[in-house]
Image (cartoon, rainbow, N blue to C red; front, side, top):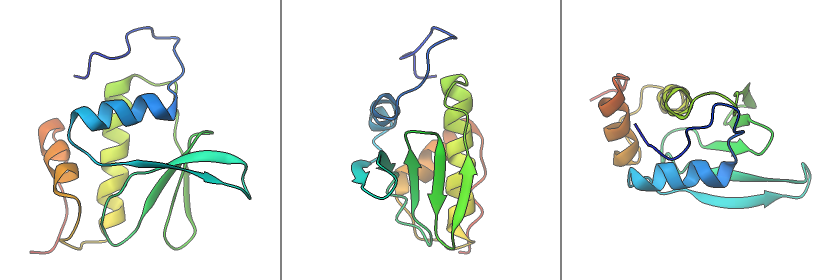
Length: 115
């Protein structure tokens, strides 16, 4: 899908992931969490719950949500996981960054939102 990373032993860095998402017109931003001493990507879902992906592969959201993501997986699989996490962050709401919805549609993840 993305053609950026082909070495199966390459560990995805979050800044590389930002580049892949940027190619899909998804706005993200990078920040530093002093308490955790890590950079993270704000996935800018603009949904009910924010999603922050940390350098260690932990994705954090609203209501103390945390999930470990394997940053070593194939980029297409990683994008699918992020789309599923995006869908979870909606909590059924219909407001979000439109480009996330388009990416979900493109890879076959059904966005579950109220109309």
